Amino acid sequence: MIRLSSMRSRLLVGILVPVGLLIAANAHRLYEDALKAIDTAYDRTLLASAKTIGEQLDVHGTREAPHLVSEVPYAALEAFEADNRSRMFYRVTGFQGEWVSGFDDLPAWHGKLPDRGAYAALVDFYDDVYQGEAVRVAVLKQPVSGEAGLGVATIQVAETLEIRRTLARQVLVSTLWRQAALLAVIAIVVWGVVLFATWPVRELSRSIGARADDDLSPIPMPGVPAELAPLVVAINEAWHRQAGLFAHQQRFVRDTSHQLRTPLAVLKAQVQSARRGDLPLTQAIDEIGATVDGATALANQMLALAKVEQLRQQGDPPRLDLAETVREVALDLAPLIADAELDFELFTDAAPVRGHAWALRELVRNLLHNALRHCPRGGRLEVRVTRGAGADGGVELRIADSGPGIAAALRPRLGQPFAAGAGGGSGLGLAICREIVGSLGGTLALDNREQDGVIAGLDAVVRLPAAPSSDPISP
Image 1 (cartoon, rainbow, N blue to C red):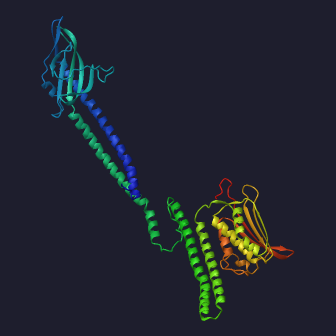
Image 2 (image 1 turned 60 degrees about the vertical axis):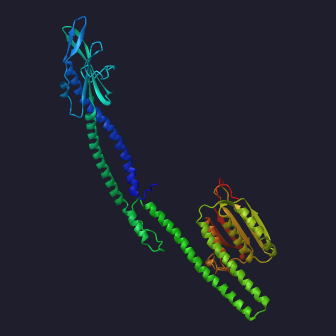
Image 3 (image 1 turned 180 degrees about the vertical axis):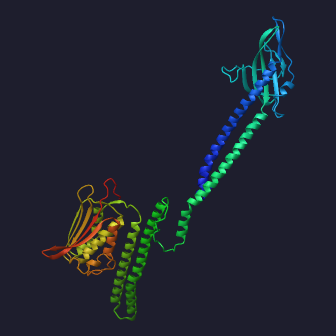
């Protein structure tokens, strides 16, 4: 199977094939028209030959029984032969249809004269086969009179078609040479025009090829042809996304190496201390277990932060019910809530949103864990999922705890990775929440709730766009 490897090849084939087919059809038509024109010209010769023969006829016999007499030598036809490539034959038929002279095996004419002929004579032209060769025949109805009476003779003059076909082929070949030259000119022009028109594409290719592997800066738009502008815009947008992913990967590697270095160093020191017997074995194992749990939680949170960026690149998420997700997470954390002896309340309305199931669960779990960490024993924790009024109303998730709220000094760094508050932790929980909410096109607000001028707790409010009601909810 032939594959077109370039725009020039495709354009050449796209232009030359239709033009070639048109030329072929035109050549066929031209050949037929040339044959008709040549037949018209040479038919005059056949008519002249028939008239010459008609002038050599006479009527003998009596008035009661007249008969046609013809003394036409074949040499009389030689003057009408174009050259030795064509031969002429004739036949004269009498008043009663009898053969009079000429070639008696030439098929007799049994046709009909045209109603309106091209000549001022009773003549008809037709094609036939004689002695295995194609011939053109002229039939002339010639009135003949003499002393013995008068009648109408039938004169047939046939000519072979070699000279006619030769002339038609010459016209065809001459035309085809000119058409071939036209095709060659078209091919050269197309090749040159495409070469010139694709010069910006080759320059763009060379410019991109010469870039460093980590150079994701946008291609300058000034000077780019209008036809290439959509391509350049798409490339710049793709590079912008790649730059974001590259920066995220670099930040992830940097943060991972920085944050895991401390727990690993602590773990190593604890193992060495346990080997030396500095602490009782049970205490040493408990400390090592706590360090491993902390490092595991940190690694899981960092992996979650990286996964959020991956989900951001996956296109349109499915339609899910946020209320159902909140109820599932609250059920999973029920033992922790009961252990803290919290006054827990849960209110949910149907709240369809666009989001990945893992991201929604991670968002709710982090916010609830954060509230549980800061809520005092026996305190109050309230979770509400509501939907705004109207078709375009958004979805709101509100988690209200009775903790100490957020200190003013911490608020500027709130939501940044590894910015932990007074409650401990890695500081990644809120960063994960902000990334998830941002990927879903929503907002996250953390506001201190005051009562009589005193901070009574913290409200974590997530607002997300509501999914269209026409979309089915994914299971």
